[in-house]
Length: 487
Ligand code: NAP
Picture 1 (cartoon, protein in one colour):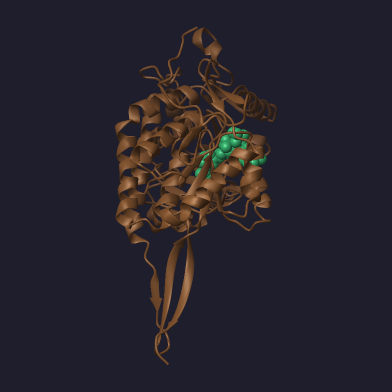
Picture 2 (cartoon, helix red, strand yellow):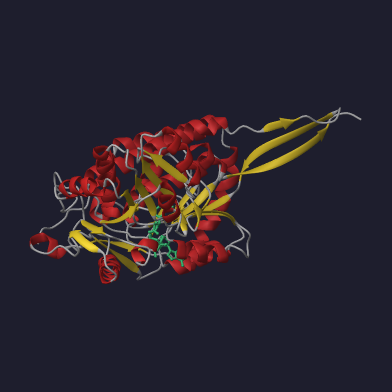
């Protein structure tokens, strides 16, 4: 079996500007999903360490908040340039712990650099307001940081999900504690090494890895933590929502998705197929905005399927470190089981597998969690895959006859994160984008995540927005001052 060399990276907690061992004797093993090798053993925080991190963030808050704006902006810019400079190394770390192809990992690190740059620029534009007031009065509205922010992030974008929380939180003048996923802590650690190098003052950003229930329990129970920002599954988001009730934290919850992708009869089919394959197989379908239900007008179904099959068969699956690989492994063994279950249920209820349909075996595939790119035809609302989030390389095809039917089925979903449709009809663009119950709509386009634009969902996909000036607002609170300057 081939042996992977992990670039040099810390494995300890980062609290109050120091790298710490954490709970004695406790370590967590990080596995390379392409080979199942143990690539690192990570220090673990318990209650004590998590409380230390909260205390450190609390102590650091007054000075960070009052730091001269130009200095805060300069540190954020420095972080952005270091992310750019070290993108190749950070990408390699990410591919080894998470599995995605190197070129995707690098784009993710670079998008983190853009996020920090955007946040640095936006920090200069945290405008307040004055409101017309009675004579001898000023009504002043100020935007202030909230205080200590806790951020909990998933494994599918182990760098990007952390940077898109930390950049705006810091730009707004908050201090923070990050708890990354136990599956992929190394990418977050690498970002903290950059924080240190960029001169972020001690205690401003703290990093704790550990048992999520313990760490999450301490973070949500603490009255000193005034905001929780979470990206992950809807089930865990619901728990954290309930746990945060007691301390009435401000919350942002970026949860699951089950994106519809509608191809109307007038769409450019080549464009739609390219877009679908790019969006679906990015990170092997382990993406909250991945197209998960593909609605195709029955008039163009045959042509569309032919083009799609030809395109999917060209995909190269393999270890993300290897040249030319389009799709890496899944994150864990249980991800394979979950997809198998969805496929079995669908096939038992009448769906047809057009290609793929199971785990990949042979040679180096046997050492990792590889799955065949799969196309499933004749999917209906009777099947679990229609309603459950699919986190893998499966394209379920559903036919429709009318625009109304497509919209009705697309909205028949508890989630409301991303949606996509392809058409050339301007009136249809307007009507369908109005009718879709989703936080984001891509029209003839799949790029819906940018540093400047609001990212987030409705319904069971949560609430709050990341990116853009909306993203910064999530880390600010409003103060009203009524100033009487003369009797
Ligand atoms: P997850 O199981 O919900 O875990 C997410 C994070 O929550 C991890 O850091 C995990 O830590 C932690 N966690 C788990 N149970 C916890 C608890 N009881 N208390 C506190 N923290 C807890 O999700 P995932 O499998 O990592 O990520 C996939 C999910 O994220 C999908 O549903 C996907 O759609 C969603 N997602 C949403 C967005 C968005 O922007 N809307 C973006 C990316 C992903 P441990 O790993 O240590 O258990």
